[in-house]
Structure formats: structure tokens, C-alpha cells
Length: 230
Image (tube, rainbow, N blue to C red):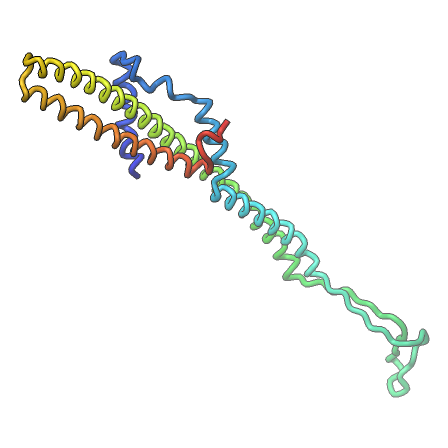
């Protein structure tokens, strides 16, 4: 949510520094599509939730095999074995005879036979759903990696600008200190420049903290240190 709110600001920031020709401070050259694509690929390979979606696909595939094998449940084979091979006639009811030896029978469960195609179809639909959910998540993951990468590059640019501002302020402080010591500049102006230096140093520290935070957010998605992505 935070990144979505800041995205327009990021795009405006990039456009502004590009349009104003701030070559020494612009972060546009720092944006690398090849690096970004590597981050996305690593995130897809490492992020645990991606593996969970693949596990769902594996389960769906197993369910299809299970549903197909369920056809065997419709078939029941039974047998009766009686020693001997002759046929015995019932003396009370001569029309009834008893066979000796092995007697086997095959029985079909019509309900299971009718249900089987629908179970297989349902399992295949569940597999399609699992694939669609995985595809959707991979798109969302790639988008989130892009946003965090842009934030990270923005923070790098901000730190460079704050570092440059601190250096400029310190140089100004050296000049005005020299003039103040010679009596060529007032104490109020010297004190003002000194206060500006302190403010710039504080801003630089904050920029460093923002950069570390943006780096951590990006590394959370790719699952490794930035320097490990070759």
C-alpha cells in the first residue's frame, strides 16, 4: 500500500531530474532492465509462496491420476473355492447343483462408472485453476519487485544528492569560517551556515536509513542479498 501511494512521486521524481538535466545527480542511468529482470527471475525461484503454488499444481496433477485410477473401484472381483472338481446334485431338489472347484465373478458398480468421468473432469479443472492462480501470483510478484526496485534506486539517488549537499555545505562552512575569523563575515551568517550543515548531515543520515530499508524490502522478495544476484 505504501509503495502504491509513493509510485506517482517516484515517477515524477525521475521525470523531473531527467528534464532538468541534472546529469551528476540523475538516477535514470541507474535503472537497468537487465538487473530488474534478474531480480524478478530470482524472486520467482526463491520466494516461498511461489513454491506453495507449485505444490498446489503437483497436488492437482496427483488428483487427476487418482481420479483416473478410481475407475477400478467400479469393478469388484469375487471368487469361491470348493475342493474337488465334480458337480454335486441336490437330492431334494435335483434341479439344483453344486459346483466344486474355483468359482469367480465380476461385479460392476454403475454409480461409480457414471461418476468417474465427472471426477476426472473436475480434477482437470482444479489443475487449470491452480495454474491460473500461479500465473496471477507471478504477475503480481513481478510487479511488486519492480516497485521495490524503483524505490531502492530512488533511495540511492536521494543519498547521492544528500551526500553532495553535505559536501557543498561543508565547503561553504569552511569559506565562511575563514571570512568570519578575518572579521569579513558576521557571526549570524556563520551560525546560519553551520546550522545548514547540521541539517544536511541529518538529512543524509535519514537518506541512509531509507536506503537500508528499501534494500531490505527488495531483498525480502528476491530471497537473497543484492550482491548475490549476478
